[in-house]
Every structure is written in structure tokens, then in C-alpha cells.
Length: 442
Image (tube, rainbow, N blue to C red):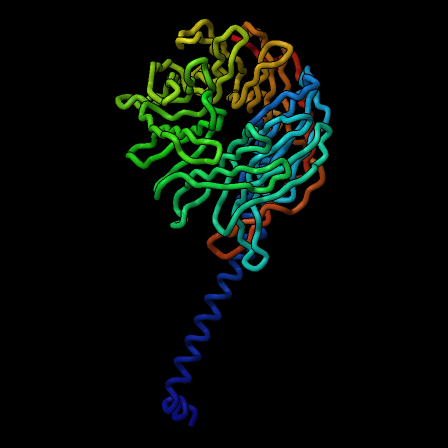
């Protein structure tokens, strides 16, 4: 009788088999997820390293102190103020969201900050980066903070004080096909309100690294583009309203910093030899119209920044290999024709990078970057000062100090498991410098 009923209802049998298969499949997935969460996540910690701190930008205040901004704890931004000897006066880490500070400008007792901050969609739980602007006082009080963006990605890169009050922001935003970046320029007033914005670029990758005031009015935008083939340096000259007066590309290399000279501009970066693929420091001089006057390369890894020296020359901040694996900070003094007057390196047993340099009002140069030489907490913030002749005056190392644990960073894996990585609430602290690990100038 039972056999007769089963034979008369084969659809029920098939449905029962499918149900059992699905039940087994979901049971296996559930067990796998349980094992993954309770063993792999908490023992192997498949999260990004949370111990990377680095200084990316520095400005000097009227009181001969310095304000530094950058990345803390790999995914947060920080800003700190130090005295003329590099000792910490105050520091802030912005833990509300994933963020980074890219550049700073000091203006009449206030510090303008540009970077990016991730905003999460409460419905989908997904996030995208928005341009982040902030204005703070010298004592660290926030006057205003705002994000500007859309459902695409917008990243703040650089900021310069405008001629007629307010500021000019250099940023990038994904173009309409949501695959590549365009250069995005915003003119804001002193309260962060957007007066106008313009985009520059094409369907391929474009980026901006620096904006400076042009010597004949308007502004010079330094960036890169791949519109004409391999990635090239791209310079645009714009007027006060953002209209392009001229633009030129340079296939020699990738420029990272630019500074006005008495009759043009000096650009620094790096280039790569086609035959050996070896990276070299690249230096080029252009006139007011963007035409190349001279072009030089040096056998170093590259250059991140340039500033003017007190005697009319220039200081180049770059990097060089100290051995087969280690990298040291490189400081080169050149004359107006790009000839090397002297060069010095600074570092220890690990990798040491300088990202930004300023000429101090009390003479000498202050450099900010990152270091792994001291092993206190992974990658640490490096702050150092050298004399006009490159002699090391002081060096300070700062790092995030681990305090109470909290859940924060979240990602998702192939099993559909949301991973909550343990991160730590941080405060900036100076690492004690022992005599056996002192930073050396070479």
C-alpha cells in the first residue's frame, strides 16, 4: 500500500530528496561558518594590519610650532601639534569612520585639513569615500567639519590658500562609468561652502598631487594622466575661475611635487629606465608656459617633495637604498640649474620615508614621514629636523598606543561571514628613544 502511494506520487519523492540535499548543504555551510568565525577569525585574524601610522603633511604656525596630519592605526586619520623641538602638545585621532588626512594649510591661526572619509549607507551597510574638509584652531578645537560627495568615490588630495580669500581644493572623483578617476577642483570660502567646482580628465585615469599659485596669476595643477598612453605627468594652468589656459603632458616620469622658481617651475618625482626598469629620481625645469628648459635624472629611488632653501637653491626630499632591503630618507640640495651641491641620508635598520618637508622659520628643515626602524608598533610616525647644512638636530617617533579594545572594522568573506576585527582605541604617544636605536645621519 505504501509502495503503491509512493509510485503514484513521484513528485513528492523528488521534492523530499531535494529538501534533504538542501538541508545537508545548509548544515555544512552553517558548520563551516561556525568554524570560520570561532577559529579562523579569532586565531588567525584575517584583518588588515592595524599598526600603521604615518605623517603625510606638515605646516608651521606663527608660534614656530608644527602641525602634522596623516594616517593612524591604518584606517583612521590623525592630527597633532608639536613644539619647535618636536615634543607633543596635543594630538587627535578621528575614529568615527575610516579616514585619511592628505594635506594641511595654515592660515591666520587656523589649520585647514583636506582628506577623505568613508560614509556608510544605513540601508545597504556599504560605504564609499567622500571628500573631507575640516577647520581647526591651533589648540585643536574643531570649528567645522564637512564631507562633500555622492554615491561615487571622492578623495581629497591637496589644498592651497586662494588669492581672494578661501581655498582651492584638489581632489579626484570617479567618472560616470565608475571605473577611473578625474581631477576634481573645488573653490571654497572660509566656511567650507563650495563656490564652484570643475572636473578635468577623460575616460581613463587622472589624478592630482599638488596645486600652487602661478607666478603670472591663476594656479598650476600638477597631476598624472594616461590619456595619451602610458601614465605621464600632466600640468594644467588655470585662471581664477578654473578655466584652462594651457595644459601639457610630460612622458619623462611621474611628478609628485612642484615649486615656483624666478622664471618658471621646478618639478620633482621619479622615472623608470625602460631597459632595466630601475627607478631614478627625476628633476625638470619648465618655463611659465610649460616648455621644458632642462631635464635631469639621478641614481636614487625618487623624490616626494621639494622646498626652497634660504640661499635661492632647493631641497629635494626623496629616498635611497641603504642596503639590499632597507630604504633611507634622502635629502639633496641643488642650485637653480639642478646641480647637486650636497646630499645626505638618514635612517636606521628598517625602512624610513619622508613625505613632506618645510623650511623652518628658525632655520633648518622639518621632515615628516614614516619609519619601521624602531619596531615599537609596526610603522610609526617620523618627525625630524635638520640644519641648513643637513646636520640632524632632533628626531621624534610617534605611534598609536593601544588602550581598551573595541569592535570596529568589518569585512565580508566568501562564506558570507561578516568579520568584525578587533581594533583598539588610540592615543598618540611619543616612543622613548634609547641610545642603542638612535637615528643616524649618513
